[in-house]
Length: 554
Picture 1 (cartoon, rainbow, N blue to C red):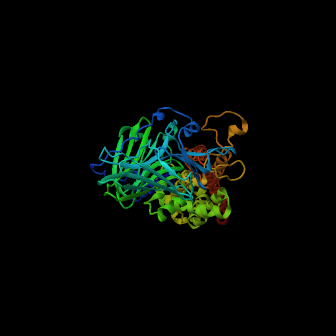
Picture 2 (picture 1 turned 180 degrees about the vertical axis):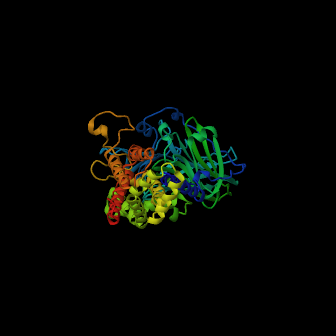
Picture 3 (picture 1 turned 120 degrees about the vertical axis):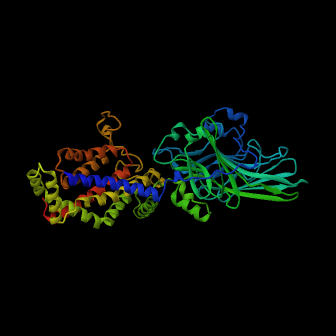
């Protein structure tokens, strides 16, 4: 039937238009162009020179006993700093477990260089004068203090024997932010020029490079513009260089982040590089600092190593004046919806105490907000369903005259005050809502390992109560879906039966398969999203049934 097909085509075209217009107004973060900084005569910072022991591969436990260490401990982190090189290479996230098992270990973030997947940060100085002895990765520092906590900062000192004394003051807040103040005292009789630097080096597991809906790789804000680089892109372009005032750079995982927070008061030369096979580095070199004889200079920057907690990143953005630090979380195209949705969910969670119920209440509130629009849509569809006998009569009467059939149907719609395309509007509104909520459930660490009721222990993971888990019959992964996706498919089927059926048999068969297609397509999505969709369908069914009864549709 041409009018119904036109409605379907209109829905598809308008849906694409919403996405394209949104992308035009809110362009994808990766499409921003950043002008590369011009080359300057600055000492080159390449990959860190390996210790002799770095060629050996140890287990994390054995690697940690190779050198003396200073413990790190606060409410969120445990680990240690290697005194040799003052290297940050051992951090565990005390609030997050690797799995849902009771005896699961804490998430391991930073790892020593001697392990199979090293991930560490270093800070120091560079000089154009090769005769100046500078602290390196194998420099043995003198430590004042035996532990770094949020109450006790750590002070490291080293004298180069040429009149230069290097002091490093490291402090830690209650969460994941380190502050590194590097001081150089020039007790020699000549002027010295030094360049501060910081780097993060990493060799990720191969599985960490897999393509997912959340960006994983190098990320940073350079001159107020978010830059995201996939690690595989550096395999071809082994060096990317930029220049910036302030901002941050580092490695972004699904839920975790290691980032160098740059000094807002000076320019920094930035580099993203592949330093070896499957080994990558982000680093910065600051502006030159001239230290006169008998003088001292200090340079301060920060280092974040922890979980991408959205509210915490917002606090750092505001309180520490870190440019767009919240964009470490991949909010996607619909940033203007995704972030508010998270805050609404978080607010509801604080009231209810369960993220699953918060999602259901969120679905109910969205349905309430869309009530007037949905009402008009359901009224129109109910009237169309009521008119089905008359439409079928016209189709039979004018089956050989398509032009006349179309004219008579338009007259019927006009007479009954029915808009065939009115059912498309709620669908168009649901598209950005669906994608935004889908993004929230995938990016927000607050939903990771968040339980609901019954067998749902992690709302960010697919429903584990699958057909094969219940029947013990092995099935292909695509077909092995859980209970909630099946419930969602049933509600979609019921909702479809309440709508007017297409007169075209082929079209009717296609629409009849839609609940089945969606059931299997969303069967392996986050269970929180499927639960939301199911309740939204139930509320739509109730609303539509009430309107049908009011109009007198059987």
